[in-house]
Length: 167
Image (cartoon, rainbow, N blue to C red; front, side):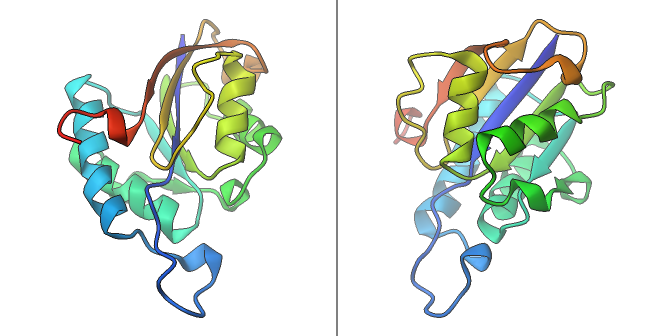
């Protein structure tokens, strides 16, 4: 079995004039919510074998905060430039190329691609929204990442910041 977590970056800032979209940092809410989401993942005793992130600052910052809270070394986060504003198809291609030794992988990226990928991988109606810092936990009853395709996954859980305890 393979387990994939599609995670949209935390809330980012639009307050810095002239900064490129790629270099936008997290805002205060994003910096507050990311550790809370990490705590929810830790409570579920989840530890990724690999973290893959878009190269955008807001995605990589989110990945780093969650990694740190889970005890996963930030230096082991793999960045993938193709995940920056990636389409669902590009996300699927990245997943299909994952090392077959990995069982649990966290992928950090952006909408609308993350939302569409989660919907197309699972066809689950609970995925009507995918707000910032949404986490779609998807299981595949497959032996190889290369077998992952549309409608082959099962949505186990959708976590969103406003639904976490203490919101």
